[in-house]
Image (cartoon, rainbow, N blue to C red):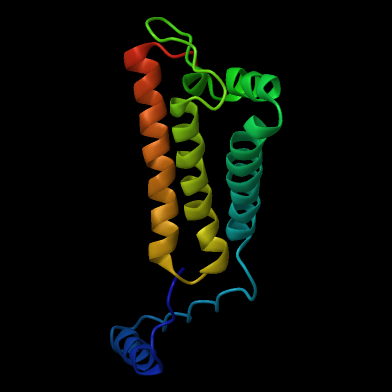
Length: 149
């Protein structure tokens, strides 16, 4: 967001502009009240991707139904199911699957944090970096190990 210059700076700019025969610049508009639309959209995405997907589908479903969990892994996270060239299928709640569950629980916690720390740019940056790391590791698995996309 654009910061409004202090009044002394605006006065200096107005004086400098009129000294050169130009009209004084208009002050920038104040920021709109409330949360920006982009933040509201991100919060909805964090809820769906962070809570519904990372916690419910990945973290809870395997304990409720192995077949439903395997179907979700095959549909949404094939690299977590295995079974592609050179890699055995990973059974429900096997060590590799449990590691995937733990990893996504950490992602969920990290990604919901900006909803609580709205003004903290560092927290938002960590959430963005976590998406980047996840994207790079999934791309790596697909491109180097021929995981289904």
